[in-house]
Image: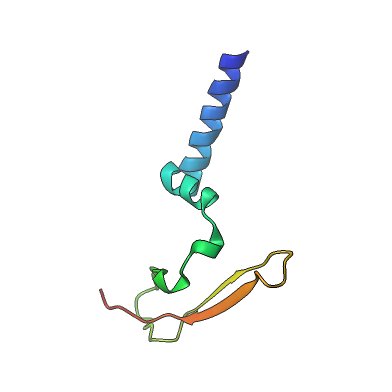
Length: 86
């Protein structure tokens, strides 16, 4: 019975990883990260747009927020994306 539970758990884990297009190592890091330790200025975003659409600085906005039950721990930031032609 214990072996069956292990096989089912491994199968579910692989299914989740396969369907989410995120490697298991990255998924684990995201589950265990503390949002209060993240520096939002270090965030890098890749944006793919259809051909013919030009993206300029400030066209894309990232809202980064974290909310807790403690009012002094909440934060909310808005970042305008700067375009890197690479």
